[in-house]
Amino acid sequence: MGVGLLGGSIGLGLKSAGTDCKITGYGHRAATLQSALQIGAIDIAADNAAQAVAEADLVILCTPVGIFPSLIEHLRDKLRPGCILTDVGSTKRSIVRLAAEFLPSSVHFIGSHPMAGSEKRGVEYARADLFRNARCILTPTATTDQAVIDAVGGFWKILGMRLTILSPDYHDQLLADVSHLPHTLAAALVAMQEDAALSLSGKGFLDTTRIAGGDGPLWRDILLDNADNMRASLARLRQTLSHLESLLEPSHGDELAQWLTAAAARREHWLQHKLRDVTPD
Amino acid sequence: MGVGLLGGSIGLGLKSAGTDCKITGYGHRAATLQSALQIGAIDIAADNAAQAVAEADLVILCTPVGIFPSLIEHLRDKLRPGCILTDVGSTKRSIVRLAAEFLPSSVHFIGSHPMAGSEKRGVEYARADLFRNARCILTPTATTDQAVIDAVGGFWKILGMRLTILSPDYHDQLLADVSHLPHTLAAALVAMQEDAALSLSGKGFLDTTRIAGGDGPLWRDILLDNADNMRASLARLRQTLSHLESLLEPSHGDELAQWLTAAAARREHWLQHKLRDVTPD
Image 1 (cartoon, each protein chain N blue to C red):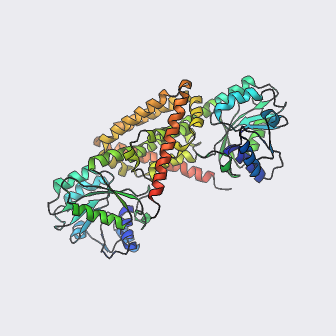
Image 2: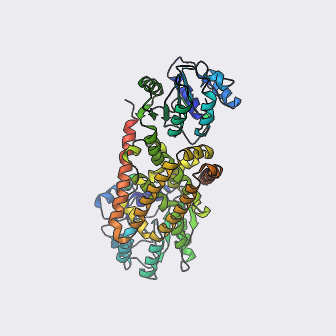
Image 3: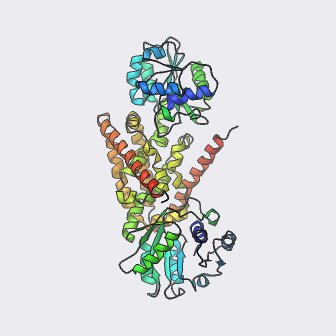
């Protein structure tokens, strides 16, 4: 469901991994489905959602988060018994809640958040290796079968992903801090500037604000879906900035330097951690 | 004065441009001066600051901003009459004030801010093309001779830089917005995170916080020197974030999407502007 950057890359990745599964794609734009067929990301372009999922063992929702409610409503009585449903959304509480509330008990749902992507959208940017060495967070609940966790975890591993298991609540809280807030800050940093300042912007500024280049409506959906955690993250950022502002005095120079050095060292520590993470075994 | 990344790159750039000027380097570490000699960034390693500047037509201060007061104090009676003095500091009001207050009238000062660099420091990272196509801001005052502006502007042009003229006040105000605040925010974004969140950080987060990897004491000096503008920039950022927070309601979804889209479009506009800027003529 949804054959854009992520959906298309899943198809290409499965083909590249040599799996013999049959991939059906469905999306509301015919031209996109044709592109997906042409690049070999899907085997079949379904005419409608019901046809797309009728015989599917695994259905993956790859649409923007904001479309999930209507999509679940639409699919609920069309999924075959025993089917596993997952998604690629950047927030997890709402989709997990929707699935628990509306899906028949014969259908198994588990939330996935494959942390790969780009500020580019569309199947034309799809790549077989988009997910390789990236992290996929699975968000099972107390009622999720271990077999379903294993099946969907195994699926993402075929695409080269590393798995992390988190509760939907904790996922959304951590992602607000490490993804949604940084995105918002990047946009705020651009929004607050005068043109005269932007005309002086260098590589540092453009790097810092790269993630502000994402799609507005897509991010609107994410931020609204995670608004409570966003408010908490913003509050903690404000505290951090207030602390920093209190150090902008010559008498606090040593503490300011230590604070800056500690932040640099902490980033370097995690950067090295990530680099080790993605080193092929 | 100071043969690190910037001082070393100036030397290499001058040699690479084929100039026949004689470059004397001075710094407080003998090993650094030896490295600078070895890579050909300087012709002469001076034993002391007085010797370094005694016969110089142009003296460039390439030390951290925090050392400027003691350096100006030390050099004031050692510069030869007619000598031009400039610097590469990231803040301009204080050095311009120091120069006006302490230098003899026989010495010509103009502030320079070549906007090139890296989060790496040290002459071992010096490159002949570090300044190529980057911007250099000159900050003359009402008393600066046009001949001095032309001479120092011409000097940076030899290294391939594009010139912008700003008052010291306006320079420091704009740089707080477009450089010092983003640096601080990157550090704050790292500082506020829990380890569990950092363990999930992806490429977006690492890009956003790349500039947090700078040198603590160096940035301490910059932030303290520009503390008033930093406070003003932080205040404007807070206003922007408050506005954003007010949009985190479903009823403001359209406005939120528009705000995000506008920020993305604005960044893209300036990115394209920069790309055109650095396209060779």
